[in-house]
Length: 526
Image 1 (cartoon, rainbow, N blue to C red):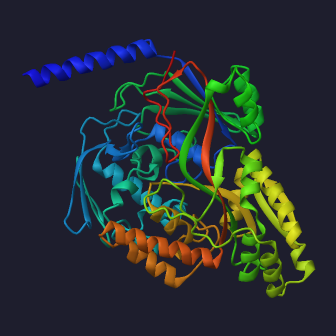
Image 2: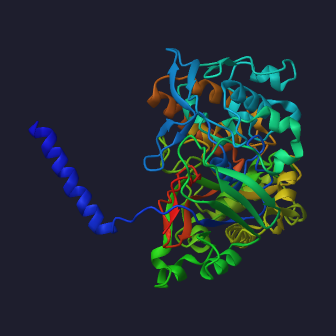
Image 3: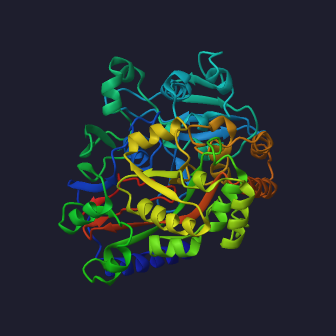
């Protein structure tokens, strides 16, 4: 009895202290929460969305079987209230809540998950996120049009979903927390596919109501959300073509949250008005120059290695990011279990770069025709490319820069109609596998593997690594695979990202996740 009493007293003291420090703010409901995103998303449909902004929106309009706890980033139940895993980690049985509704009032059942997942994998839909489902039994047959669905996904009844994998993979739980695994109402999709693409019906805390292209995406609170009524009344994702315009609007009071553009962090830190509104959020994210290894002259290994040696990463990152990133040391960023310091052999070496260019046998004419495409409106991408252009010139590589709108850029990349691009990769789930398999497995060429890299030996090792039960052994194998891929130089690692935002003082309970998603059902405005 004394033990419980003492614990209660401790709680009272702690709670009282917290009240004193925070003022015990009383939660207010309602209000419009305005956030900036750069460029119009290509899609906000869970089966098609691959860019960061779109997935941020989808995570607040949909919820899958599991989700991440905002405070701990650990996996917790969402639509699945519990689950069972077979001893060989090849069969997962999810037991669903019976009180989950879509925003059209329809109940969410196991069949809705099966339909949604098959919609992603269906080759007719050419989904860029289909690779997430590759471990599931029947994936290859369905992808090859030899089957009509995923035989490994079984809706046992309305509240029981059984998933069978082709091989043992205990980490599969982390995968199903990705927005691509969200349930979708079949009737709503089939009734009007075009309307659904513009305003998908989900089961999350906010309902997408209007997408005004190149201007804003509006969401309203879904009061029947299974996790409880959201505190905010409305979300507005305002679309910008560049970060500095968004910053200007933030300063004018037109936004509650805005990304910090390149070159602005130091000035904001020195400005007493905004210094305490800066939030630097660690992200499981890395940025690379992706090289299309199938495109001449980038199919030349000596040229790709020369590029790696010619880049002075420290100078580039310090100048372009001003504290919003750290120098990349490999493919897998810090914060991921298994991260190895200094995986790369490519320290800045201009002499070595010039030697490799000579070995490449390429003429000065060929080296003068090289071009990089990157997203328009991204001040970070623009700065990185300009700095890299100057550094490469010292090695004898002349790079032309071309900024493209998101849709045009994505089309070029998907079709392999480019030689070089600069973009980032943020963890779909916090595993080493997620920085290796999606980006470099042959089966993902043209979707997540935008280097069009193909190595049968690497493919085999990536597949085998997933099946290793001992975690330390598995991580060691992944580290070895990482080194081998780096030796082939399909990318030039540049930086590990630190996400910088300005968050208005009125914003409360706003907590971004390290995987780049931000759940907003608990956020509120003071």
